[in-house]
Length: 293
Image 1 (tube, one colour):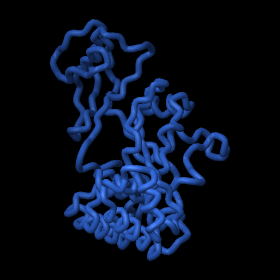
Image 2 (tube, helix red, strand yellow; image 1 turned 90 degrees about the vertical axis):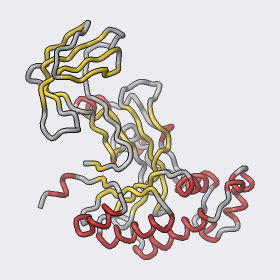
Image 3 (cartoon, rainbow, N blue to C red; image 1 turned 90 degrees about the horizontal axis):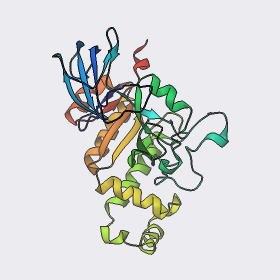
Image 4 (cartoon, one colour; image 1 turned 30 degrees about the vertical axis):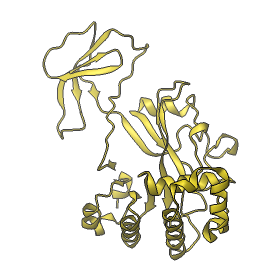
């Protein structure tokens, strides 16, 4: 489940055996879950080309009519924590494009996305029409850029490049939480001190790195610093994987201090600090399986 406080993308999930042409298509008598109401309703959906032009319980005209009596039509599902398109077989390293040995904060998976992945038709047939594909977490507590993709299998990729940064607290990370938060704050403090004119050239950015103890210690590259600068200055969403209530509270404190566009993923103990999360309008990405005792 994803709870978002800003933008919600709504795409209806429809499968056809042929290519949608410019003629209008009417899907009638279908049970519609529109994502707005708790209760479904039986209605008609009109498509002009590949655009949904009307959703109505009234009769609508269409060049081609599909009787969907007894069928269900839903919004397309957005997979919000996915490796679709960059990992084919997890056990085979030659099919994985989700990690980097060189870059950390600025590592982007966008150019590795495979629109012909065999996993895409299977996911699409189960209602997943788009994905936020994320890399593995890097050695930095914040770092790695995810991208949004439409799962249409078109070689001309439809998506938004590097539209989210990821991070994590605890979990599989071997370092102390105290060290994790210290590194986060050192990186964010460093990024906050950078003036935009210092990002004009590769040489200027390299000089910034050389003059920063935290950047030099973590062996950051100009690509990493550009991503860190975006996080502070361009409202780039930061998805942090965290579960402990105490970790969530610390992330909220950091969000307030550096004005971050924070999203928390996992959040198994979010119920303990729900009021604080709501007050700060922080979206959550929650795995429904965590509700099982």
